[in-house]
Image (cartoon, rainbow, N blue to C red):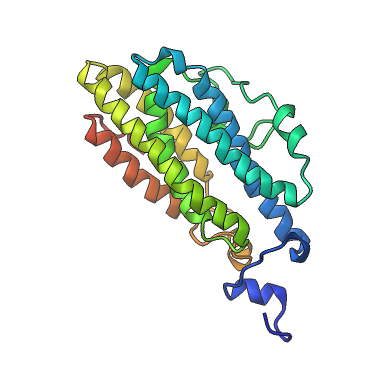
Length: 254
């Protein structure tokens, strides 16, 4: 950054920051919100999958579910480490929130966040059995990768590096889900899978927000976003539709 360039201009021109000490307050607030949303969603997601590990139909499936739980916790830990560099009490953070807490299955909270933490709304809903878990992961894993691809380009370089390292791990979770869904389809679970797809589709879709955020221009200028919510949702929808069609399911209408 040149002596004559302001920090705002530097970020708007594509500059990057590398240290918490030179991060302005508004930038810090948005960055902390982004990190908290990811960490809380990973921990809540891991807690939800942990409950269904032993419902897997075989050892291979249970190992896959356990691996997802372990890796989601590890992914959360990597981002939480960056939060710690900004002063977050990382030990209390992990133990303070009720990660296993869920709403009733028929609750409808839209994109509203939990009062206890910043998890995406989709992680407030309970998983019902193995088939439901596989379909939820089939859809949600693709949403996570779309979001991580976006976050891997943010202007805070240490966090962007972490997100780039996490992306292939989360991509593999989607591959495990696709493998599990293909097996379920071959064993006559199509009707149950279709019902789960209809349930989870709108809830995963809401992870991208209910509309265009008025803050998008500001986030772009800070280098914290490039693609708007509608654009990210469209990318997810195309990938999720392809994943459902591949295992003989009909994508829900949107």
